[in-house]
Image 1 (cartoon, rainbow, N blue to C red):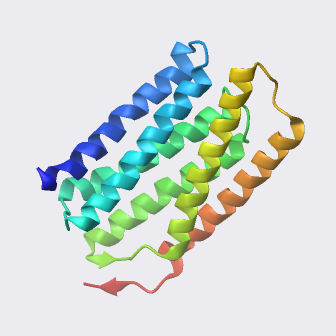
Image 2: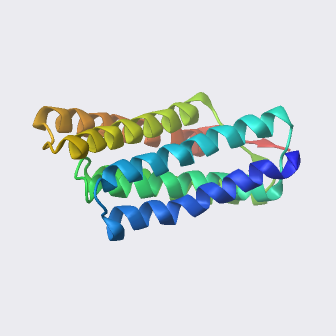
Amino acid sequence: MKKHITNILTMFRILLVPYFLWLTYFSQPINYSIWITVVFIIASITDYLDGMLARKYNVISNFGKIMDPLADKLLVVSALFALYSPLKFISLAVVLIIVVREVLITILRDYYARKKIYIAANNWGKIKTVAQMVGIIAALLYSSFLQYNGLQPNDNIKIIIKIYFWITAAITVYSGMNYVFVKKEDN
């Protein structure tokens, strides 16, 4: 069971993405912002647990190598689109910058892997992930707070959120440079 728990958590996270999207765009129940926040946080926790358990039990599978990063990207991209619309907290340009970087780096990593060239993740990739997750969770919590209390967004806080995500987009692009300019090692 230990060797399968990480894959189960990854699949659960992938299954939460369509539910997140459905809540965001189609359901719109009372307090939908609270529900999408809860779903995103649960999915983020499964990502943390997945990584922690994989390291603890030294469990690495081909399924996990492919599906875990895919689950992460699907979750983040879905949340970014939710922050763009319907929540209107970030710019479409920020969403597109992050999405394009993720797609290009995924293609590049696959290209290098086929040539048996492996590029280790660096600290900028970890900083990128933390910046994205912290920003998304903070913006979703703010949206939930507003919705729960029947308030409208404060323009100053919206500007802070927008600036934060522009900085996050810059970090995201910079972290991708590791895959473009770093010396590759053949294994």
